[in-house]
Structures are given as structure tokens and as C-alpha cells.
Length: 308
Figure 1: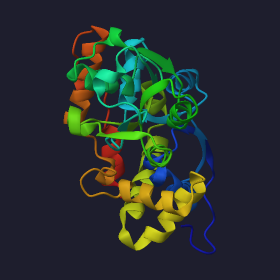
Figure 2: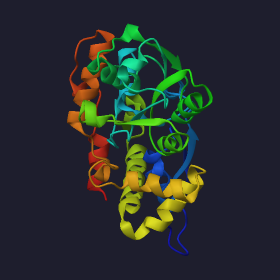
Figure 3: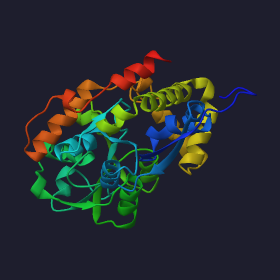
């Protein structure tokens, strides 16, 4: 926080696009506690309607930083856009939900499933889980609905939408709406690198100190969020930031701070989880399996940690 009598540094504006959910607590904390402002950053956090807008907006310069599935950055590189993952985050907190009448995976044959978009991110996780249970990509249709809240609403409002992958708080809403929880996706696919911050490499090179300052504020916000002393305040940030009632905000906080499956300490990248993500992308796009190093630049992250 800025000390009394201390002049605030000049502010540099950043527009950051995120999917609001469990993963956004460190950003809420950094914003609310003045951790961005202390470093001369005026950060506007915009909710993502879908991953396509994240990627297109980053490429066009509408957003300088986005927080989304690591696979989205890989998709940008595959499309010829020089982007890079600059830190880790979490495993996605995702569970697979189905309509209450679905008794088993075979019941999804011939049905319509809901995804963000059909060819990136958590769609490949969904396809892999179904393949493990005997369903190929041609055995079901995909309806593209966008962000998790839209996927939940699609399943809640249209019973023909048979399944979707959801994370808190929308997974909590889904259970309360009577949708059936088929379990955490990482229990099936193993380690997975979910949400990460990623940027254009050219922007990072031209704004290295800015990116370091941003990451430092995020890491400090994360450390504050995971400190049990701040539990009550952190739950309030979820309540206000996600417009969630107290009980759902509390459950979302518990998911975020789970010692085994919660937010990664100091936003460290899970390299094995990143390899899992690349294997799934290669399996369902027919592309070659690439090395993680092609998509990752942790130099700014390492500078950030060293300066804290």
C-alpha cells in the first residue's frame, strides 16, 4: 500500500482480459489492496466472453495481457502470432457436468455437448475424457457457448445440452441446479496446466519492466490470498468480484486455497501439466507434438520473484 504522505507513482494503463472465476482472486486482491497502483499501474480488468475474443484482442492490442487456458497461447502461436506464456496459475479447477438423466458416458453418444470453442483449450480435455470412455469425436456434436457462465446457463436452460466442463463458482451453481458432477477432470487426465497469463513477445520485450511490475503485483496478491489470516477479506473479494452469495464465495475460496489442487504457490508453472496440454492438442488437431519451451518465456517471472 502507498504510505501516508507518499506520492503515488505515475500510472501506466493496462487492459487485462480474464475469465472471472476461482483463478481471479489474486487479481482482485492486487487491485483492492493497491498492489498495482503502488507499482504505477492502472489496471482495467475486463471479463472475457470467450477465448476467441481473448486471442483476437491480444493480437490486435486491445488487451496487453490476458489470463486464459495455456492452450489458447499455443493456438495463437500455431496461427503465426508470436505469443508466450509468462507464468503459471492453476490446473483449471474444472469438473465435468452432465444432465441428471445421463447414467453413464455411453448416454452422451449422439448428444450435443457445450464448450467454449470447439478447437482449443478445455475442449480437448473433454474429448480426451470421452475417448477414454469409448466415444470418438464423431460420436457427439459441440455447441460453442463461450465462457463458463455461458456454458452453465446453456445446460441449465436447455436440457438438450448434455454436458460441459465447468469451474467454480459455476460448478457450484451447476450442482445446485441439479446437474450431475462426474468429477474433477485432472483425476482422469492427470496434471494439467490451466489458467496462465500470456502476452505478445514483442510487447513483453518493449515493456519488460512493466510486465515485471504486473507479475510482482499478481504474485503479492496471490500470497495475500493464500494466507489464512486474510480468509474473511478474500471471501469478500470473491463475493463482490464474482457477484456471488456468501456461501458460494466461501466454497470458491476453499477451492482456490486447497493445498493439493488450489492456486499454484507463487504462480509457478506446472511443466508436466503443460506437456499434458500439448499432448492433447496434438492428439486432436493431428499436429506434431511440440516442446513446451516453444511457448514459454519465464524470464520476466524470474525477475519478478527475485525482486520480491
